[in-house]
Image 1 (cartoon, rainbow over the protein chains, first blue to last red):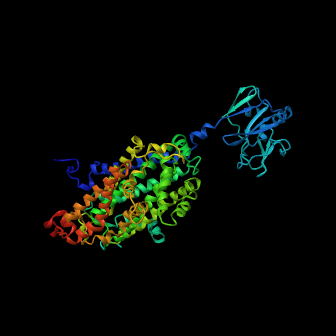
Image 2: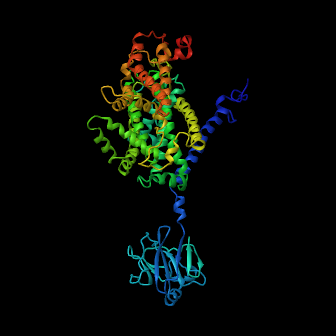
Length: 190
Length: 421
C-alpha cells in the first residue's frame, strides 16, 4: 500500500522532494515535544524561588499614627524592610515646598509624595536608593545631613525633608510605598 | 576503549575544533553516549533501565536541591516546614515534594529492574564484574540515601524508622550501643540526628553520581552486554549509540515520565504511609511500623530470625539482612557458568524466575504485620534466597547443559543465512 513515505512525485529524487515528508514531521515533533515538557517543568522550578504564600501574607503593615508628634518619626517594618513614618513640622513642609523642581535629581513635589490632606505624613522606605543601607535621620539626634531630611552613612547620600535625593550617589528619592489612611490616625501599607 | 570501527569525533565548526583542542568535553560525550560508542544491535527494552536510573537520579538531585531551599533541619520545625511551608506556601512546593518522594520510589523501581536484567542476562560475569561490583555499591548508597531522606519530614514513620534502622547497629556485640549513640548523636533520634541525616542526604547523591561515572567507565571498557550474552565479533554486530539507542532510550524515558507524572498528580501518597503525616512523637510507636516498600524484602529477612542460635536472634537478623546484599558482591564468582544469558540456560532460567517470585513474596511479607504466618513464609523465602546464590546457582553452573549459542549477535538477529553474507 502506498503511503506518504514512498510516493515520490515524478522527476524528484528522494532527497529533493519539495513536500515536508512524514519523517521530517516525526523528527520535528519528537524534538518539539520534549522542549514543551522541559518548559513545563522548569517553570515551577524557577517559580518556587519567588516569595511563598506565607511571605506574601505578611506583606501589609498597619501603623498607628496617633502617638507621633510633629517633628517625630518612627521606624517600623514593611515586607521585612525598614519603613520610615515621619510627621513633618510646618517648617519642614515649607522647606520642602520652597525647593524648585529644576534643582532636583528626581523631580517630585512633597504633595505628590504624600496623600491629599495629609501632607505632614511622609511615609517612605528606609532603604537608601543607592545600595540599600538604612539612612540616618528618623530618630531624634540623628545626623540628618545638609538638607534636614535623611543622611545615609554608607556612601554619603543626603535627602531633604521630603525624602528626596539632593546630594550623593543615590539616583532616586526614598521610595514611597502604596498605603492608605484607614482612619485619620492609622495607615495600611501595602 | 572502544571497538576499532567506532566513529571518530571530527568537529566541523572552527569553534568546536578550538574547544576540542583545549577541553574535549564534546568528544567525551560523543564517545560515551554519542555516535562514537558502538553498542550491540540487539538490545531490548530491558536495556533502557540504566539510562532511566540516571534520569531518576537527576530528577532527585534537581528536586532535592530545590526542596532544601525551603526545608528546616530542626526537630521542632522540620515537620511544619514540609507539611506547611512546602506543601502549602511555596510556589509549586507540593509538586516538587511529591516529585521527590515518588521519584525516589521510581528510582528504586528502575534500579530493581536494572539489577534483575543484569541477573537474567549474566551482565555481572567476566569481563563486566567491576561494572556489577560498582552497581552494588551504588545500590547500597541509594539505600542509605533513601533511608536518611525518609527521616527528614520528621513524621512518625521517619522517627521510628530512624530508631529502628540505627537500632541495627546496637546488635553488634560489645560496642553496638556505643556505635548507635554515636550515629544518632544522642540516645534517641533528635536534632543532632536530623541535622547529620540532612547533611549526608544532600551529600550522598553526588557520591552516587561519581560512582555512576565509574560504573559507566567500567562498562565502556568491554562494551555493553546484550540479550544473547554473546561477545561482539565485528562491526555488523553493533550500531552507534546515537541515534539508535538515544532514540530507544528517549522513548522509554517518555513512558517512565508518564508513569512518574501519574503517581505525582493522581496517586501522590499511594506509596507513602499515613502515619508520616503525624509529627514525630518519641513517646508513641505507630501500631504497624514498616519501612518504604523498596526495603520490604530486606525487612522480611531481618524479621525472620526469631530465636537465638549461638548468636542472639537480633544479631542474626542484622547479619542476614546486610549479608543478603553483600552476597551480591560475590555473585560473579559464585556463578561459574561461561554462558551469560539465561536465554540459553534452561535450568538457570527457571532458578531466576523462582528467585524473582521469592523476592516478591519476601517483599509482601516485609510489608505485612509481624504475624506468625508471614514470619514463617518469610523464613522459608529468606532461606531460599541464600540457597539460590550459595548453592543452587553454583550447582547449576557446574551441571547444566546450555542450549547451543548463536555464532554471533547478527546470526541471532537475522538468522544463519543472512549472517553468512
